[in-house]
Length: 555
Image 1 (cartoon, helix red, strand yellow):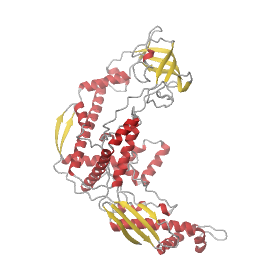
Image 2: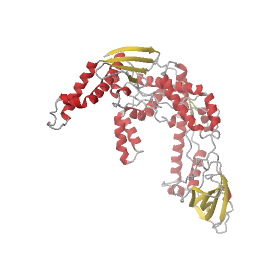
Image 3: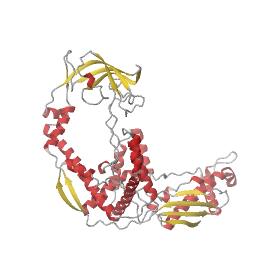
Image 4: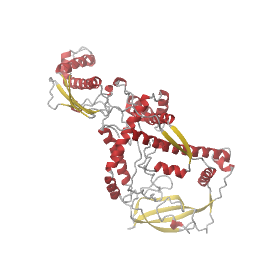
């Protein structure tokens, strides 16, 4: 095989590989010897079919497979000989004029990882903002638990429903022209007046209703209601109040705790205090991590692979576009986004640079995820699947290095950050929860979660370990999978065994939408068929949409 470098500009590389016809034919012969014993043909005993007949029958397919194999081997040899560290899966194309029996000319182009300068991690100084879990906050949480556990007492038949009462209703929803709409009919639905769970006006018009009373409620669906045929439209709900109940008295004592399966009120308070402390510690860590990444970003500047930046930017942009569709004025939100496109691209570049930098720090200082830790991560991830799919998931993780890397990334990231925390000079300052949250959201500390990868900078591509993940999720893939495609030699992808493309390294910073507003929480229509399932109108508030800002604790 002959190799000619055709491009060496910045981090971009391109090569032309010439694979001789003799090399291809040699692989055909090897493949022929391998498959011949398995070929069956009438008139011949199994395994005794002459090689020339096998070649005549299966020659084109064998040649195609041999060509694919030769190209894969050529790419692996290229990576090893040129000591390349691809940032993405190489792009491979076969000359359109190739004919069987001739030499094959293959063009390979890729971007390589930069030589990351030795990270400056000495002299790091961080402030740890701490918030004590006060008794008032614990008591407030206990009160919320008590509210959730409250009981309802049947009201007298002549009782007029008031704010805070629970009214059970049967209902039929109709559009302005009197036609019942799909999903707008239900029975035995409990409505707590004042809870804000249903569409505006529905609960308020139940005030004063008595058991057995029938009413017609006039409402207008919100403009951003999920069901497009109802969004912004007037409607009526014909309801019958089958029961009215008043909230019973809830006493905060040991009985409340025992109803939750605990021994005492003090035990409940202790558990809640622990949860609050865990949450506050997470906020403290998030703030420290942002400040840490800010310091690293300020002290390091080097070229990063454009394709990795573009992939990261695409992920950010898709996320923001999705969120814009939930704004009160999606068109205005998109317009404001366009004005800040360059800023978002800079954030993407910074994420990639920080990811590469942290990967280098982890490599240089022996940070690793143990097999025991990895096994625990896999077991935890498998729990989200049913028994039938769990085994398939485990096999997938074993067979796909990129999938395993995705699981490994958050833990590896935490270990690198913890290592840097140990190196840093840290001072403590006690603040309030509000002050800590404000500090997290401030402009001067916006680098949060990271997703970094072990790029094995020893250049041993035969044993390449990706401590990280592909952002297929949010994710950010490189645009090429690591599968084999032997159907057409003109669409070949690099073989996994060459392991040329490390998983993408990015630091996920929250993306601040400066010019858009958060949408108002959507109200929902009643639930059809009692509490059995959601109606087309959407009985409950939709799940809160993912925020553009992603904190380290969510990574």
